[in-house]
Length: 134
Image (tube, rainbow, N blue to C red; front, side, top):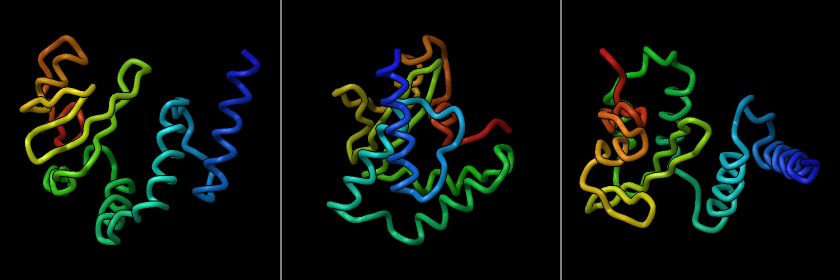
């Protein structure tokens, strides 16, 4: 247990060093690891375009019910990565030209993936935060 705690503390320390801020409360260890790996990848391949970063910041500042679906779906283009936490697990889906990559398998729709994750009928775009309930 102490090793797990020290690993998490190290990840939080890394976050502070990399992002110059404290991580949001409640982030899973896995999400902290993903953020650290993203930083490494961004250093090697370059960061997101400035207009995309501005759009993400605008979305982050808006209330959950104020987000315009069109502003999110503009980000869901091939090359984008969707991350969703569900019941304590983090799920990552990569958007490809030919569909959606999840767990080394290509799906035709996000709804298929959301159904497999939840075991119920979910709108895939809604589940991954690309649309909100009207």
